[in-house]
Length: 286
Image (cartoon, rainbow, N blue to C red; front, side):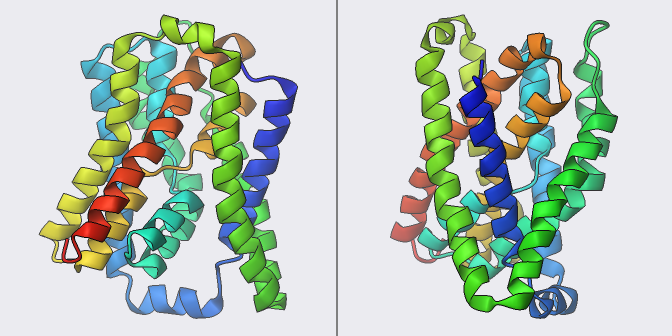
């Protein structure tokens, strides 16, 4: 499904994104999280609670084929990405909370994501479909290397870290859109082969994640700015990381089908997040 160019582009994208995330980290931020962890903990519970559950429910309820179901659940189990930070900024939400959730969820994912996949993806596998949890855990661990590079950059130079952070956010969105667009154009004939329930699942995952993330944070008494951040951070997952995990850990024959729902999700979540951001800007107290 993805050619050599797209795969190389994906590797660069993931490196830039993770380095950008790491460049947002500082000792002061860690101290702030330790002093007031409530917001981050609520956000993480929403992100790693709702999204995998929604993905599993959609896969079961819509009776998706095994590779598509695993691809959807994989997206649901990934941590947040820098794209959510940018939408949080535009939505006039709590950017500090969003960035903290992204950073902490990325680190926590090394341990939590394989456990979530065992709980939600393993029951969806068939006799001829193996879930390579060991390879996934190894890939996630390696992903932390560019995060560490970003942390090192920030410790040496705040100015350089700011530039890397902006590069990670802005270029990440641009390259992601180009990657999705290129893949859809090159494989447009395959769109007809995706069942309608696949489109329903791809659209619903991000949208329901935002709605339930917002509802949960509101029920727990978070401020409007925090609710927006949790909603966007919950619904917008790190799609490039999901692409990388599928390409790095699953055999070639299964990749094409597995990549379709993450690809469609990445496309539609940008639309859903844009609509949500416009709504948040129009309703200051929401």
